Length: 594
Image (cartoon, rainbow, N blue to C red; front, side):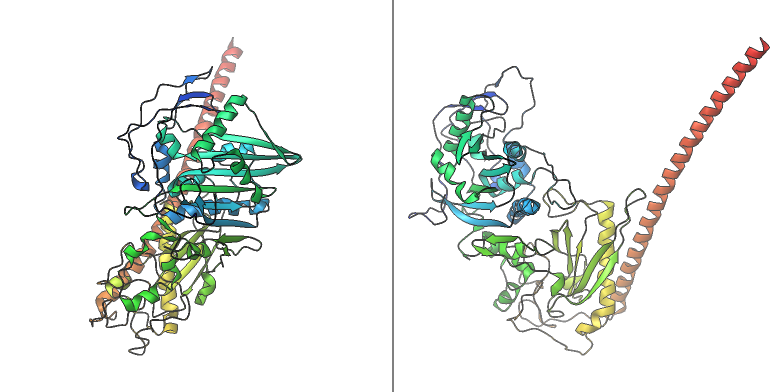
């Protein structure tokens, strides 16, 4: 693999089909599997969302050498499992999380870069950290489905699924190199997770070739678990299906890992529907961007420059912007190095003006330990000129929901109440979804959602005069700050991402002068002082209060039911003991009479 482009780079990976046949033995399960050549009519889709649509070849049942029959996991599951990541940056974040979790083992950096596959000149993604690394057992756990030893209060990962879903979401294949020192023993391991290999050879089970070495006197000696033939077959498979065609090339990958660390290379990257790579490495040599950004840029020229300057817009298409706010606390001795340049972390809370800290006490139930959550809320720097609101919700230091919108009014209805109000909190008391881009929709989350909405309304009512508005949403001084100049000196915090931005609708994240719609033509401005709007807001506030009261009553009801069940159980035990005593007394009476 090379950081520099070859002389004749190609834009699309050539996945020509091989007619070679061979045998491969999986070292871990000792299964003999016959490789089959693919029919000439068979084609592979290079688009991620279509990659699972292929007809599996019927393969002969594998022979199990003195092993019990077991359920198998079809390779299609790798693709199905990866579809949990709707967003490519969410997959990259999973791999960054793995490196951040290695800080406790001494990691000081993680590198993310574009390198080249020397076999076909195609781009590949490199992730490399100098953490503790993985020994052979840890490497097998990493490659297994659902295994995770990360169950502490500080580690981000917990499901044992992130590596598989993230790598398979970014590309069809991934190869992992890891070196670890444990006491006086030093090992290095190589593992190949290849969807291409599994599809082309017609496997009906997920096979992951692995080879391990022990380092003695600076020499790598193979670690043999079953037989030399098994180890050699695994190495042969890795050399055939990885970007490296010789053992020497494989061993060279450990040179920059030094004593310990891990390197992940994702190759055969997925394409979009137009046949281009999903990830764009050419638009900015210091960044990685999503290529489909242009399809969402239906903005007027006067708005484009401004909207691109805001972090909430940039983080949806720029990996550098997204990674800058991905972690709540700034690292003291750790860096994310993207394409050779360290990422400067940005604290959203520190960028707010007129900030206020609100303590939130979630209702966790009778048996749970009480927790207090500090929520920082304030106006974005550009308020009131920019229509943005929402909360940035973190979990264990990791951003889960950026600029989560809670108000249903907003610019689409002409309402300005709550606009410019942004909050930040770390919600460790609720569980994130598997893709870590949302939270499980539990009662706890619903209560939090309602409470955050109330915070926005309360903050607006008490602070809106600081940016020139009355609580009802009208301007204090008529045409106060009708609009902002197109070029903004500061990079601000803008609104939540919209799936489609249309020029005939107000654009969230940019300033639209009052009386002018997004296309630049005059329009009537709806007043928020009319009784109808005030009545709606009043009803919304009352609904929030009623909902919170209902939830409190539900909590009390649940507690009372538990108390009743406990008392009923005690009463049942008392009756049983009473019955036993009565029986014993009756038996003793009969014995006395006799």
